[in-house]
Length: 90
Image (cartoon, rainbow, N blue to C red; front, side, top):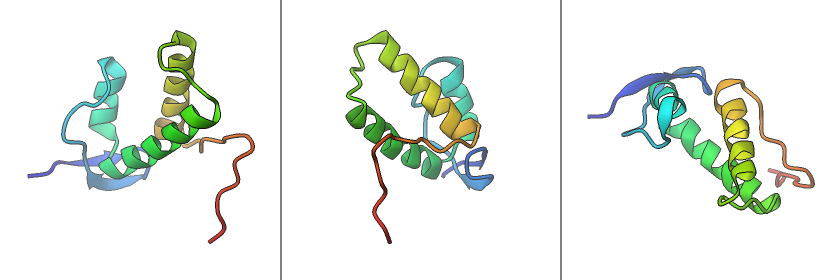
């Protein structure tokens, strides 16, 4: 049986994550307040950020940057902007 959360990113009730995907207090906050749909959207943005900015997840500064962008995206309503990237036209 799936659980429902009020997703802070989507501003609606939606299916919650099955388990905590990120460590620590931030991971608990994500688990309690972010839906599967919003998390999937973030994962797509995260992949683009890692690739376009050539981030190395072994570098603490790069992990910190990615975490800051994640918080902005999931909890503060910011859209992740990647310099030089133009989304495909519909």
